Amino acid sequence: MRSKHRFPYLLVALLTVVAFILVSCQPAATPEPTAVPTEAPTMAPTAVPATATPEPQIGSPEHPIKVLFVPSVDAQAIVSGGEIMADALNKATGLTFEVSVPTSYAATIEEMCASPMDTMGFIPGLGYVLANQLCGVDVAFKAVRYGSDVYYAQILVQRDSPYQTLEDLQGKKWGYTDPGSTSGYMVPLVMLQDAGITPSESVETGGHPQSVKAVYNGEVDFSTSFYTPPLKPEGEPAWQPGDSPDVPDDVVSQCAVTEDGKSIVCDGWTVLDARPNIREEAPDVVQKVRVLTISPAIPNDTLSFGPEFPADLREQISAALVDFAKSDDWANSIGSKDFYNWTGINSAKDEEYDFVRKMVDAAGITLEGLGQ
Image 1: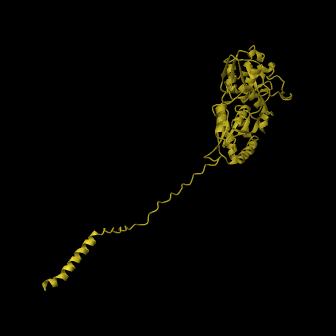
Image 2: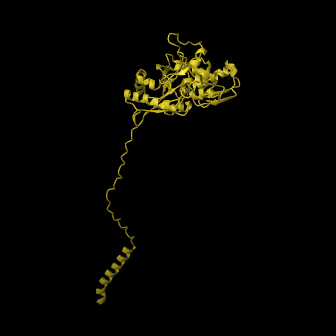
Image 3: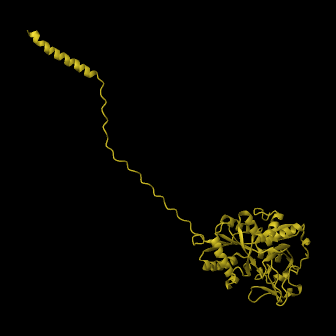
């Protein structure tokens, strides 16, 4: 009877063991990953673009208009007279100007091309043609001197020298002003080439006064510089092309610096070429230095603007300059005999300088080759 009662207990135990074995053989369940609480990502702050600083307006105190003058006379006379002009233009237009005298004609041209939007230059005809070819510098005005808007180159020799014609200068020492000067170098160069003249030596003097001084001191046999015809005594007809370029021989001994120190007058004849530029240190310059010959007519020096100069500013400045030329201050600025001796200005057009272009082409003149 005991075995009968034990069977149910054994069966239950056996089933429990089997169930345990089956459960233990099942692969372990992969636990679900525990979610890690996260915060919403913080966005990087968007950089606010810096506001670009606007360029100062041309003609403002921060960006003055550059007024360039070629160094054809004493630099101090140019700067002081140029400042008078700059002040007058400032009062008329409200624009700011900065006067400077580059070291050479070529440097003046290069500056105008390097700063095409803010430069205005008082440059000679040759300089203008080269600047126009190089970067499009544009002429606005030409100088008037004593009623004429053309001028000439002159060849000077000592008054007691034996030289009477251009051909007499073969093999002689030449003093020229600056390799970029129209009257002081380029036109005389063509004149010498056309005449078959080869100087024994060519010396750069540094300017028109220095060129006159080189002959006066006997440092060169001949020199070249600008020429403006003399004013004849009151009542006599004005000088005309074909007249003698110098004052008459019979008045030379009477040439003297005027009481105000501004001119050399010879018995009513007023000398207007480059010689009076050294009148203070050499008041007898006309007695010692004579004009051998002069060149064909050359269009007068220019006021030209950089190729990208703003049209509205150019118009304002041009109008102000015309008014300034009528004022008394003009004579103390660019109208001074110690400055450029402009007695007025006329409007100019590019085609008026075609003669100079022909000269440039004929001589093979380039900015890089000046003086070579």
